[in-house]
Every structure is written in structure tokens, then in C-alpha cells.
Amino acid sequence: MLDVIGLTPAEEELYRCLLQLTTARIDELVRRLRRPREQVVAEVEALRAKGLVQPTDADPDAPLRPNAPDVALGATLLRRQEDLEAARRRVTQLAEEYRSGLRRHHVDHLVEVITGTRVLRERLRDLQNSARTEVLWFCRANPLAMAGPENLEEFDALARGVRYRAIYERELLLEPGALADLAKGVGAGEQARVLDRLPVRLAIVDARTAICPLVPDRDGGEPSAAVIGRSQLLDALLALFESHWRVATRLRLEDPLTTDDRPHTERQVDGYRPDADEARLLSLFVAGVPDKSIASQLGVSRRTVQRRLADLMDAAGVDTRPGLAFQVARRGWI
Figure 1 (spheres, helix red, strand yellow):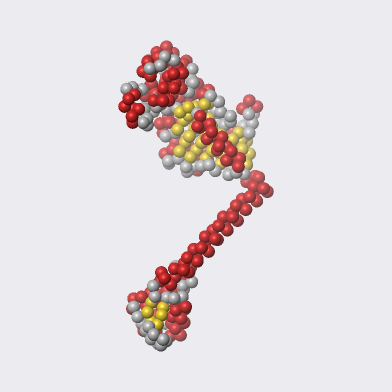
Figure 2: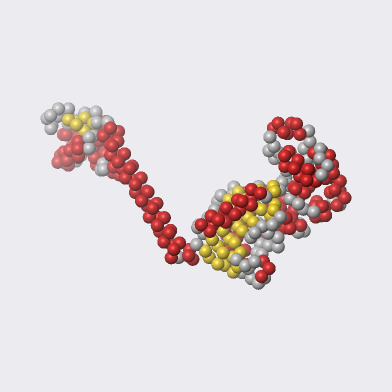
């Protein structure tokens, strides 16, 4: 291994032999190593030039003794490390020049256009199966290629430890069975938020690949989408997602008793904590879902929803729905 700093295997073996003997003459090294005397003499001279061996006196046939290797080889090792670091920087620079050339002359390396529901669905599945760190979603109503219940790849990815962050359009929550399907994803580890409206449909995997439809939903026909690789366009889409994530309303559907992350002091002075059903109701309420739709999703009457919201306003000490929404956020009820 020391040949990377100029020490041959034969020289290293001779030096190790000398370390074991502490001191030794040329003839003794010849016998132990079973090498020609001329070869041993040449190797000793090489070690002497590298500062690893010195004679005990001026006589060339005098006993030899080893020098400390860290002192003799330390400067060489440091120079080699500096050379490797300079080479690494150069390779990085060349790689960036290579990628810049691809971006200038081979746009097809950055954006691939795919067409058709089946092709789009399969690409979404392949990307999720290859995900290693995080998947981001803009989920609009009336999915083009893959409805929520069909996305089994998400559960496999969550089980592997992949993080999922999804923002849903409010209209999507009004679709039959949408809340139950969303609850399964949240229960498996998905982080879900809601906005009134999303600008585009979007999926981003591991901050390296994005899929974004090219034609507005209203145009009809076969869907087409751009598969976007690492580029400034992908950076812009990541920034778009993060800006919407910051302002979206958190949707919590699990039992707050097992996932309570409110500050300790606030939990103590609160005096009230919503149960799991109330947390689900509040999540939909804060997301702006109408009472009728909340009732349908929860399997209760609209009057029951109104009564429960009135009870929660009493518990929060407010007499308006906007006041309740504020208190829900302040107290960390969802």
C-alpha cells in the first residue's frame, strides 16, 4: 500500500525486517530476505535516500538502524495529499464543464417529453421505486394518470424510509373516499398539507428528477409531461414546492394523543385536548372543507359537524369560526 508514496513492496519488506531486528548489517539482511546482496544494497540505498535508514557510523558495512517512518514519510504523504486534493478540484471543475457542455448542446439530457396515461403512470411508479430520500407531490383534483388508491409504490417507499411531502388541493378532499385514502398515507408516514389551489401537477424525486404535465387539464386528449433532470428549471420547481409548502395548512388525521408535539407548557395550561375524531374534523375545517363535505367524509350528519364545531369553539374560548381556526393553530390541536 505504501507504493502510493514511492515505497516499493520490496523496500517496505526490508524496512519491516529492519524494524524487527532494530539493527542489522547488510549480510544479515541478505540471509533473512534471501535476496542477492546487490539487490539488498540497492534497496538500502533507496531507503537511506528516503530518510528511513541510516548507518550507525560512517562505515558502509556498519550496522543499519531504521528511522521513524512518520518523520521520514510525513512530508511526502502531505505533498501527496495536497496533489490529490488539487487533482480532485480539477476533476470537479472538468465534470462541471462537461455538464455545462451537455446543457448547452444536448438539451434532451435535461428534459424528456413523454405522452400517454400509461407511460406517465409507469414513469411515476419507476421514479418512486428508485427513490432514496424524499418524494414531493402537488396533488390536484381529478388525477391525470394515477389516483391515490392506485399509488401502492408510495407505501413501499415509506417502508424503506423515504420521506413523502404532499400538498393537496382542497377540491380533491371533496371526492368520495378521498379522506380515507389520505388517512392511510398519513398513517404510513406521509406529511400532508392542503391549499385552496395548486398551480400545476408536480412530482419531484430525490431533488434530481421532476415530472410536470405540459398541457393544461382543460385541453383534454392524451396527457403529456416533461421529465426534468438536474437543472435550473428543476431548482425553480423545488423552490415553487417549498414556497407552497410553507403556506399550506397542515392536515393531521392520526390520533393527537400519540403524536402530540405541542410545547410542554402549552399542553399543561391548555386544559383541553381534542380526541382523534375531533382532530380529523378540525383538520378538514382548517383546510376550508365545507360542513357538508366534512359530514360526508366523517360519516355523520351536517348538524353533528356544526354541533361539534360549536363545542370546540367553547373549548377554545371563542365565538367565531375564524377565532377557532386561530386557536387551533396556536394551541397545536392538529
